[in-house]
Length: 153
Image (cartoon, rainbow, N blue to C red):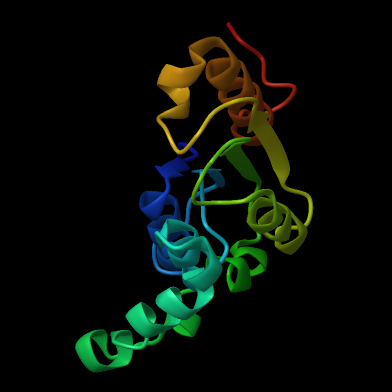
């Protein structure tokens, strides 16, 4: 009878988004989630001018090797279907997930909370700022998972 929260970071956050229909939680905390595989792959490419082209060439192999395309694994397209309380955590200096992706995720998950970690890259946000991380997560989980008006005795 206890409520369950799911917390995932980066690719683990994406895995939670895709697993939600089969293994639902009562609340989700998604840390450094990418919006689309193409965008996050492009941000990892070495030659800035050719990033989009490089990502397209790399991701074109997916259907042959994995039987699915990059368009099949776009977390931004699945967030609204979760329908549970959702918090997004993002680093303001993440080299792989730009502000546009984070805002697209927040817009897709209507009612979600977004917490920026100023100066953080694509790092363990708990280690980056333990106090901010703990305050944000515990406050979110307390309001979303705990029964209000419960009598403690």
